[in-house]
Length: 498
Image (cartoon, rainbow, N blue to C red):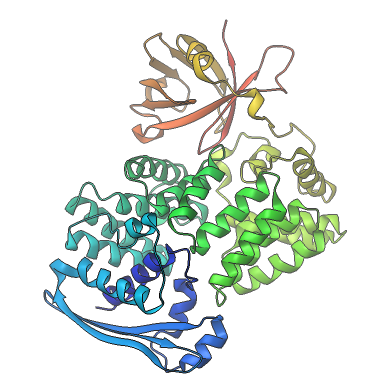
């Protein structure tokens, strides 16, 4: 029953974190003390907290017993201690009672919005909730084997409650993280399919959005990233993962000094697991041109957690700026081991492959990054990356008129061969390319806001994907690559056939 106790702990942390008047330590640091005999005064000093909630859960068949006590770490005294007995069918009521006891003991006054948020589970089905708890434990273990088990649990939760948006958001996060960490083999799918599945479940979860859903939207959608993460942090202001993601997005968006403060706040909430937060601080320092600070924090992050290989790209560039060429080359090799396999984007120029993972808004930062890698021979001279801005984007009626009807063409990122796509006024599309079985595929386009959604029967596993379309300032005078569309997978230059 360990998963159940862990899940209850997670939910109590999440619920209490929604209250602006409380500072609640994150689960990673909390679980460091699990099963250990540690004095609460020591915990208070370690984590910088005034109170500790501790207890136990016992579950036998449908019966649940929860013991809980709230302790003042400065005195070791109990503010309250109670036992709650009930049935799994009433588990949400039991959790609400505990939450209300804590809030009352700490004399915290809730706003109307906080009252609505605290205790929200997203489902009325205890069995679906239990599957979510099981899946969450596997997800947090962060191994390939556990990712497989988490996927099965989250899918069972959805089968039990098809409207369980939190389970769909959890699946979206699972697939996105698997792609980021190169663990997509857990699901026997490719990197591209993992990214597409993340998008699919994110879209479904946004019917009733949760903090997790907004967080996935923030880390996977460049154009709406800041607003998505602001919504995530409104729902869960003490979530260190959301704070760290905000650091990353603000740094990419040209606001690294602000981003650095979010990473510091994240570490304050999760002080015993600093690796990832140090890595995000490294992004902020890099975007501010602070090369030595970048090296210091990312070196420490990689030492604490070698799986953070994706951050080694910043380390390679910072080393190059400091004239430490051998260390720069070694860091670049580390980065390559953690990035998507080359055959996925085999025909893309190297600079474009790198910059897909480093979407700097500040042109100076982007140029500085690439030039430093070229100086030490990590990137050969050749076609540059694509840099577009909001003023280049096709939107509204212009976007619709551009595609319907149209014929567009470009070069495949897989093998460099020519592809073409013909779309009727009604949105029916025909795609022709060497890599498509039979050389041709049919599908449809539709518009949601300023995005174009596309779905074919064969291409990309028959899954829908969306693109944002821009005029390409670096399109050639010969009329090639005048446009570029950006998806979860790549930036694709193309031309419109007149």
